[in-house]
Image (cartoon, rainbow, N blue to C red; front, side):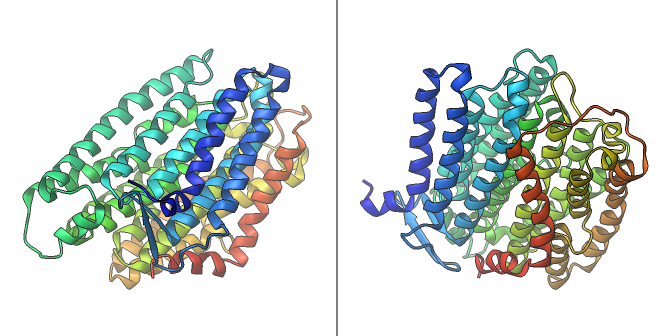
Amino acid sequence: MFELSDLTIALPEIFVLGMTCLILVVDLYLSPERRRLTYLLALFTLGFAVVLTMGPHGAPTGTERELAFNGTFVRDGMADLLKVFIFVTTGAVFLYSRAYLQERGIFKGEFYVLGLFGVLGMMVLVSAASLLTVYLGLELFSLSTYALVAMHRDSQRASEAAMKYFVLGALASGMLLYGISMIYGAVGSLALSDVHASLTGGGDNPVLAFGLAFAVVGVAFKFGAVPFHMWIPDVYQGAPTPVTAYIGSAPKLAAFALAFRLLEDGLGGLHGYWQDMLVFLSVLSMGLGNVVAIAQSNLKRMLAYSTISHVGFLLLGLLTGTPEGYGAAMFYAIAYATMAAGSFGMIIYLSRSGFEAEELEDFKGLNQRSPWFAFMMLLFMASLAGFPPFLGFYAKLLVFKAVMDAGLIWLAVLGVFFAVIGAYYYLRVIKLMYFDEPQSDAPIEATADLRATLTVNGLAQLFLGLFSGGLAAACLAAFG
């Protein structure tokens, strides 16, 4: 049986679930002309969820934890911070998407309902304290995104991308579930704390090590790390751009939480095993992602391979197994989510009915057509490349510092090398915007909410870079 305190701890999740069900019912009775109400209710849900998470009932500080529902759900500093940024980035995606969906006749309640159910899955995953809630949150989020990719039913490309994503995602989920079943068989408990406690006594357990290998494969797929990256370019290109923006931003925060809960909270005693696996995944992801991105002419595919490379950098912090490394990895995940949301928001900004601005050539001469938003795109590209003083620079700096403090100097040097290679394709976008002639003189029309959100998102790259100390301290404090 659960207690009243359990409901208080899980209040944001309960609110999001209740509002999502309400929106689902309300949307059934709305005509297409009044569907803006669904959009506004979805934004209200995310905004009020931020208030509840930061909440009046007192947030845990540092490494303090509050357990609920018989130890299957945890609230701590990491969970609260990640949830807030999941709400913020998802809200930004919703703001970017309205006009795009309306112009293509797919401004439907399904986008917001599935998006909110995906957010709920991410919240459960972030607060998972049991192998059961890990899998519950992961599947709720994954099933929502599979459906979102296929939302544009008249698009053959979207249907193909959804099928690939579903088949490969089901395979990865099955492997993760198989790993979880082996861990449960070796330990006899689903609680991550029990799994962690069972490893403190030392000794080798081949069943547990075997389960770890399958669990790492599941985590790597959700991150999109090489060699489990094959779904990312096709899904990013095939899905409607608002869905790509959704998949490419907030889920990276949930993927970080998945990795931390499984590998540190549960299998921290096997750090020596999974560190070697993450080193392999990280190096391959940084190398392949940055090199293959150079050859892309489609911006969505370029950003897809960019995602793969950034996953490699994020894994650098995780593999250290230190509180500083975890804090750096979480800071990196938050920084990347904001950068990715803005980059895809710029594609939405340039797109119009019957035209998808997803080729690099579509950004030629943007400075002549829209100087302010060319500057916004410059901020996103510079931050993704890791140029100072932008947010992406400090994210990479924290990760490299954590790796060096862990004694893995060669890995930090390799990371810097791949970061230099990756700067090329971001600089190419900037060059096209400022030094090439525009391909079209068609006026760029965008709604006020899209323009305002892009401006805030872009300036945040500079502001959070110049004043990164507060966010970095909050990330590091979550791990002691």
